[in-house]
Each structure stands twice: as C-alpha cells, then as structure tokens.
Length: 433
Image (tube, rainbow, N blue to C red; front, side, top):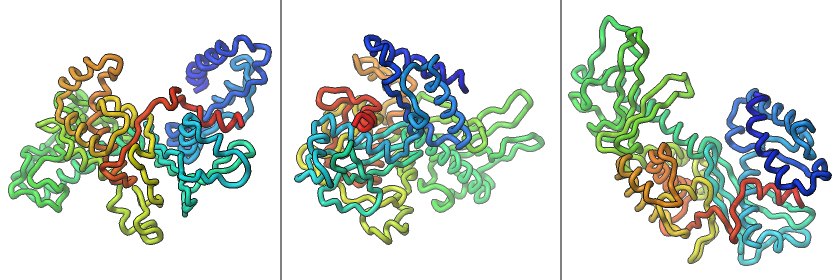
C-alpha cells in the first residue's frame, strides 16, 4: 500500500516543487491538501482507512513531502462537499461568487445570476443549484467563503451512480435478469431447455432455444415477448478451465465483447452485444432500471414532498428556470459525452437522444472509424464501446432522474471564463479564504 501511494503521489509533489522552485525556502509554509472523492468513498472502511494512513505518512514525512501538512489535510470528502465545490468553482470562474458573497448574512443573488452544476464522475454524480427564494426543505448545504455571506445551496450526491459504477451495476442487473429468464424458461418450457447430464455444470441452465415453446410469458422475467433480451449460455467444467458465461448487453456495439467480473462472487462473465448490435431504446430500458424512479412513487419523499423527488426517491426542489441559454453547467463525464457526440455547447436532452441513437446504431468498427477522423478529440479505443450506454444513461439521468425538460438547454464545459476547470479549484478557493 505505501509503495503504491508513493508511486502515485511522488510525481504530484515533484510537480509542485517545480512550480514553486523560486520559493523553496518557504516550502514548509505552503499547505498541501489531498481530498479523496467517490472512488475512495465506496471502498470498504478498512481499505479506506489503510489508504488514508499511507497518504498521511507520505505527505507528513519531510523527506518525501517538504510542504506544510496536517493530519486533517488528507481526508475523504463527502459527496455533498464534492457537489458544492463544483458549484463554487464554476460560479467563481464566472465572476459571480466572490462579488455576491461580500458582506455578512445570507447571499441572495437577486435575479439568480448563478448557474447550477452537474458533475458526473466514475463512481458518483452530483447536482447543485441555488434558489433565490431559499425554499430548500432538505439537502441544503450552507457554503461560506471566509467570514463573508453564506449561500444556501441545494446539493445531493449519488454514490454508485457515476459512469463506471452505474455500468457495472447495469451488468449485474443483466446477469440477474439472464439467470431469472433461464430459470423461468426451465420451469415453463421443457422443449426450450437441455440439461447436460453426468457433467459438472456451472450454476445456470443452458438455453438451447432462444424462444421457449410455449412462448415465455411476459411476466416471467422479461417485458420483451419472445425476444432474447439477455441470452445466458454456459459450458461444463471439464478440468481444463471454466468457460465464461455469456450475457447480452443491449448497449454494447456489434463487434465488441468484454469480460465482467461479478463483485458479488468474482465469477467471470463475457458481455456480448445483441445479434443486431446496440439499440438506444433497448439500452434505455436497461439504464432506466438503475435510477429506480418508478419504484420511488410510494416512497417517503413522494408522501412528504409530492412532485419534488428525483431518483431513488430523494427530495429535490423545482429546478431553476433556464431561460434561453440554460442555467446548468455539466462537466466531467457529461463533457466527455458531449465532445464525442459533437454537439453544440448549449445542448438539449432531446439533442442528446437524437445523437445517442446515431451512435448506438454504429458497430464498433464504425465507431472506431468515426473516432479516427476526430482530430484533437480522439478517444481511447476501449472507451468507444461505452458511448451508447453513456448516451442512454445521461438521457435517463437528466430527464427521468432530475426532471430536465426535453428542450431545456444545458452547457457542457471543461473550461469557464477562459480557464480550464481544474480538479480541486473549488476546494482551493475555500481553503484560501
């Protein structure tokens, strides 16, 4: 652990030393911070504490880090802090935050010239916005920079709803659905199955026929009649190694397979595309299940705050009105998708759907060809297979989760006011004050 931490942090400390080389005599007075986000938040407690301990040992050792470090300079921040830091950074770069914070009491921002922010990382996602009427009944974060006015900002973070974590959860749902469909087929259609005898099999039924006879009822595990939403196949264990179980993912492009290790039991699966390749609408049905919006209809939130609930039944007040140019900025994963889809900076959810359907219709070979001509914007080839999922997931998250209207414009950015949007700027502004 300590060796890995040293290998990760040494280049960063060396970079800081190079930038501040003219002030070497004052290095011990320059504070250094490390604030871990969702990737570390989702680690088991013991692993998380061991990692932080190694980080503190490295940064607190003058031989490895000459800067000013205290125990609490390295910690795991909450999802709400991550959300509010992003909101603060964007509005700081727009020139809104500090000017409107001058004085004492509560910041009002008459006319609300601030913008809301949408952050989409690998493990979590956040939404944050200010309401001029201060009418926030839950998930309120009081942001105060220095001794000036404080801001009442709505912010909420959803752990496991970042792109990587959400995609892994989707694959687990696909695996579970495949197992359920196989069990239902076994129970309802003797002609639709074959059991291998006298051999040790993996713990799944082998489907010899895609469509059982009689057809599998819609209520028995799939809402697609007689179709093959999740084909599950298996091979016997013959002593030479276990062949992986194949599971179909409607978001995966034709011509691309990938392995997936279940976090539940470590079992290996081979994720394969449907016969016709990816399909936006079918992919959308898969991603919609991740948000559990429909299941929250009877939640406490709907009972306490009817009409003001987002995904998972979490309270969310009405979104600020966007106007002609939009009142929200999306970055991180949102920006990566926006860039690949080649959309205008100010984009609607409807436009994401349209371009998402175009991308989902491409094979992996076609995606690679499309990517190769995007000079200056090329994406890693292994990442290409994720863009249909990303298009569908972002659409579902914005429209069904947060409640953005189809024609609401959102700005997708990696810089604001001519400045790149660096990780940590938001936190640095607060620490500096």
